[in-house]
Image (cartoon, rainbow, N blue to C red; front, side):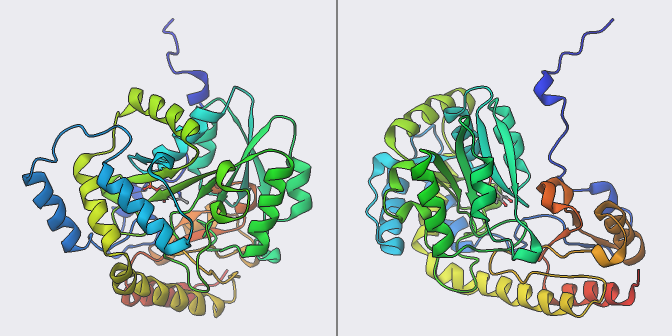
Length: 383
Ligand SMILES: Cc1ncc(COP(=O)(O)O)c(C=O)c1O
């Protein structure tokens, strides 16, 4: 008999987040609101800088820690934006924040160690934790509590095996952003139980009220926070695969060793592009992110008028996470009905953890004219 060569931990299935190409090819007039990729091409000045620097010879392996010019630019930007000094030995450039989070989990987890995530969460976290031999502990947050992180629920989930908390702010898929009180509560708990915080802060410019505050900047948190940044969303550079990990040098040294066995270094041309992107961060925000703000608010207004949906209004990202309790369907049945009856592709809430049930995710990655058509179609449906 043929042996099953697949490692047991990979026989669990995927994240449920890949693009449904079969559904997309089913209808000519389909509107795809399923995937978390920006619909704008990277700004032409960033592309031009990458071409220029490639021509100047940036086509080789680089420093495994990252392009020194990029690291300096990251430190400068961090201090300018958040008022906290950052030295280059606290920065490791990674080929995306997905890889950054995977490196984080590989560096900190022994088999059976537990990591707390707040559901609904970015579905890939579970795979990243399990890939490293860890256990993903789901602490739910709920729509009827505005996705607030409940301190009692969090404390009840902490065990002697808990090593870290993954905290995503602003959050995919709910669009929620968390205020200073929540940050302080998490910081207090992390210090009390001696935990790390893996802070996924990749949607920071998609914040529609207040200024962004990284949890690393709270008192006592620099030494226990691993910050994951990425150029993918904030700079509309998903395909370039470049991100940044900010953490204590001892942790970064281990991640760098693991990274050496995986990809060695982030793409050198993408890192040159990232230097240009950082120098343009204000204009990029004005030029592109304001468009996402308009779309999110337009979509929220339309959803609030659809009787069979409910919504916690998002404060950040380009996602909305409506509830479907009133339809009497589960999320899979609802998404199938939306596809068949309105030719709209969305993502069911279940891959986002236990409290994703009864919801679906809309990614506002089409223009308002297409959102309008999508919501006109949804408005005509009844359940
Ligand atoms: C919350 C969150 N974290 C991380 C990622 C991965 O981003 P990157 O392109 O940097 O791997 C995504 C992508 O959708 C995300 O939504």
